[in-house]
Length: 133
Image (cartoon, rainbow, N blue to C red):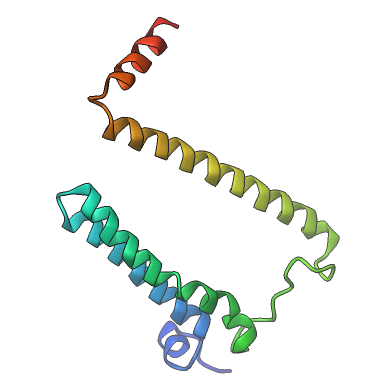
């Protein structure tokens, strides 16, 4: 039986884990870069540039299962080879996750806009209108 410790997997070519580790480092780097600046607009631009650089890693992670067959089976890509008992819950879970992500993203964007524009008259009017209801 072969070794299965993480050092062996990363060192001997489990590309999926290695590329996920790179993605984790990029994520931590974006957070660190965001907090390194006092000016939020400048921090957003700098973090955005790092995110754009990190996007290159996404196709590598996605296709690593197909390019290098180290430990994982090939992807099924929602083909009919998925057991019908699993296909429907998988699709509903994907749809639910996408809807939740979109909702939370829009709520966060609304809060950031209100926070950035808090001294504008339209924000005060909006708060007064909601207070009357």
